[in-house]
Length: 198
Image 1 (cartoon, rainbow, N blue to C red):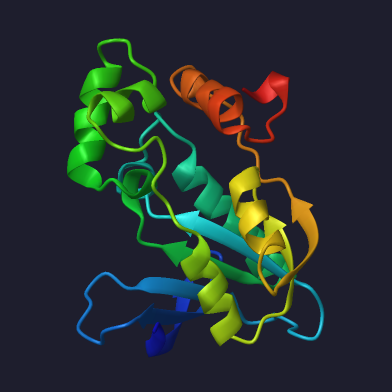
Image 2 (image 1 turned 90 degrees about the horizontal axis):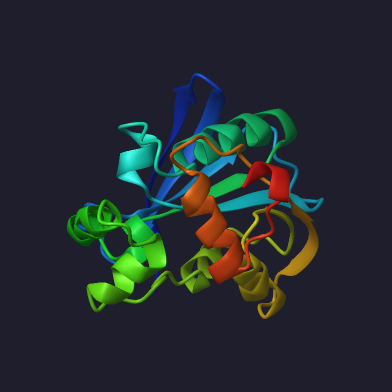
């Protein structure tokens, strides 16, 4: 069962957040994180973002995806409006960085993101957002506004004991490299993206 292992206030360029590390084991060096804005009002629907780890986009500013920009936008929005980012250690749709780089190499040969994963014998998307529901339950959050374009995340909330008050889009304009990636997100996974942005 997932538990709070450590927590502290962390000042960032977007403001100060309460950062909580959560895992089953206190020796887990890659725990999930709950990042909570100081001004969060838990008596009202809480703004929540489920965000899966993406070292290439967040740390190295890869142009192949919009993950880093989405995390930045979510931190800014949640600092200004209150809320929580549930940061999930599910790198590369939960295939890990090594397989992700192998998939990138296949993409250089013309495969899209889904085709590359399948060619490697991996799922198109192996993420599980049930742990995000578990974390929200642990934090006693009962009513949320979900920042997402992903209908799968919406489904997890709708099928849980947490009430979905609203879906808030978090769309980043495509660049010349990410356009195909965003098109696959829309066409294969049904992400709720505007045509002029993807």
